[in-house]
Length: 291
Length: 67
Image 1 (cartoon, each protein chain N blue to C red):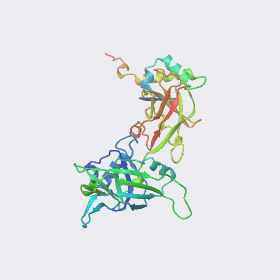
Image 2 (image 1 turned 180 degrees about the vertical axis):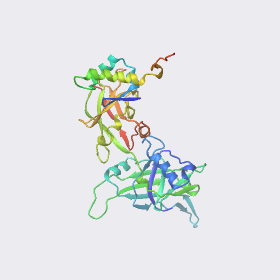
Image 3 (image 1 turned 45 degrees about the vertical axis):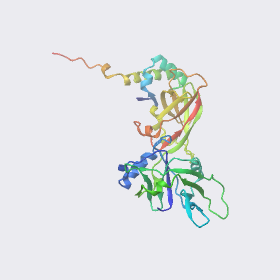
Image 4 (image 1 turned 90 degrees about the vertical axis):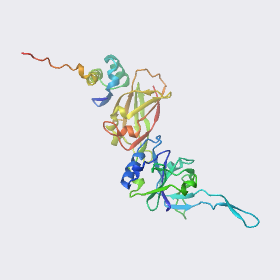
């Protein structure tokens, strides 16, 4: 096993044996998992390239009796500190994973993806004991500023047997992925019509020009009341004047004034399945108040 | 099912369930097709929506001519 280069986190994605037959097949399965909604158990999140890996695994804890008899009392968990030179926004994204205890797949510097074999020859991630990334900070005149991610694996037993590996011939960070798009109100609402706009989270680029006509589909939008009730989308239209989409909700049943309504795009899988597929974005909902 | 009319994409299934007057009233409140021709456009839109969701059985076939 080489040094960890890419960490792929998931809540519960298990790859079937059929996904592991070759690099291309695995790539397709991984891409499909990347494109799921962030709330999907099978979503896979990819951390950026880790340029440095320090092995912090402690020696096993031993006890020695007076006559020199020695026993290993506790094995040590594998632990690493990984450094990346990603940008601030992506760094902040990694910090959001602090405390993560769900599985991780590891790609090493030889581009071999390591996993824990399942009973059916599939692949599941390694247990994570703890994950922590230091928050972004300013640099200095002596050192390259890097993010530092500490990962402690959950158990040594997974390393003792049933380890699986597949050589991959692609860079997981370069696979198409979804971009987070926080939504906001572009102008005051009228009746049941809300003017919603969206900007890419890190780049801050307005998505209007690229998705102007694609998001005119009523099936692209989703509205929910605070009580969790879905509100039917009556119509959708783009509005050049405000670079937004006018999302009009059904007026039957009536929604009382000041009612809070969460408006968002449907999840990436549903966006991709629309008559005119919408690809590459996942919204962060905006909560609006009925005027 | 969506129906695009004059730049606005309507949820045809939902809007067909409204009466034309209710649809026009909602459109006026929401500012759909603002301007002097608003009501006329809303009525045209509703007629297009009704036609789009009409079940096939309602589409009358030309009467057969029996000689």
